[in-house]
Length: 396
Image (cartoon, rainbow, N blue to C red; front, side, top):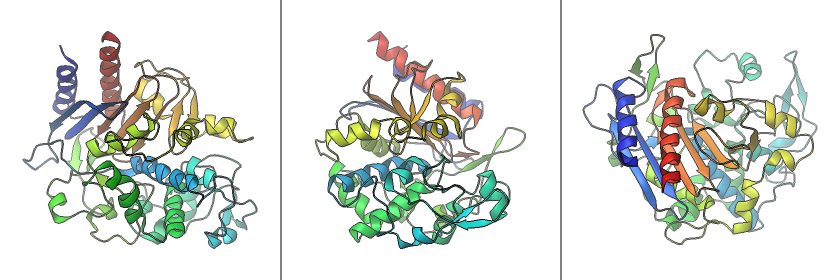
C-alpha cells in the first residue's frame, strides 16, 4: 500500500468513526516540494460540500509560527531586538499589573522583552489559565481572546513577573502589536508584503473575502457523549466578524493547509521558500531552532515542566523532553512515531497540528475543526498519520 493510500485510509476511517467531520493532511519536503496532500470528509456536519484541499480554515494558534517569522525578520533588519526592553515601543508595559496568588494586583517590576513574548515567559496568559480565569470570572468553555476584540486580548494582567516562569499566553498577540507599531503597518499588511506575497500565497489573511467564506470549514464541538455537533458563532467571534478590530498574531489567520506548509517549510530550508524567495537568513533560522531553556538562566525548569506537552498527546509516550524555540515547542528526544529529536511543533484551538522536522527534512500538518483542543481522538489520528509518514520515509 502506498503512503497516499495509507493516509487516505487513516483519514476516512477517522471520519467514519466520528473523530472529525473532515480533515486535510499534508507533507512537504525540505524545499517545499509537496510529498502528499489528502482531504477527507465534509467541511461541516449538516452540509453536503466535501472537504477539499482549497478549504479555508481558521488556523488559530498555528498563526504563532508566522508571527514568529515576522518578528525575526525585523530583528534581522535592526528594527527589533530580542533582549532589549520593549517599553519604548509599548509604553503601556511600564504600567502592567501582576496578579498575586491572593487575588491582589501589584505593579510590574521586570522589563518585558521580545524574546519573552516569543517564548511565553513574559507573564501573560490566556483566560483558560486557572489563575487568570478566576480573576476574570470567565465562564467554562469561553475564551474571550477569540472574540476578535482588542480589549479581550491586550487588557489583562500578568500572572507572574516577566522572565520568571512560563505560561502559554497571548505573548504572540503582543508580538503582532509590536510589529505593527515599529512598521507603521497593520499586521495583516506586514504579513502580506513580507511573507505571503514573497511566497506566492494568495489565500491567507486576517479577513475573509465573500468567496473564501464559501469554502470556510465549520467548527464543531465534541459533546459529553463523544459525538460532534456544529457550534454557533458565539464560540469564536472573530470567525464570523468580517471586520475584527484586532488582527491576532496569536490566533487570527485564515488559510489553507497547503499555504501554511509553504510558510513553515522555510524553517527547513535555511529561510528560503519553495519558489526561491528568502524570508530569513540561515543564521536567523538556526536561532529560532535553539532551545530557549538553554539560553536564558532560570527558564529551564519552567519551560521543561509547565503547561501541556504537545508531543505526549500525539504519542502517549512520556519523556520526549520538552523545549521551546522561537514561537514553537521542541521535542528534545526522538518520538515513537519516528519524528526526530529537535523537531518543532504546535497546535491550534480547533485541533490543528503541525510538526517540522529539520533532521528528516519534512513538515506535516493535520487541519481539522473541532473543540476542545488536544482531543485524544484527534491526537491519536495525528500520531497514526505521522507514524505512516516516517515508516514510508525510512522505507525509501
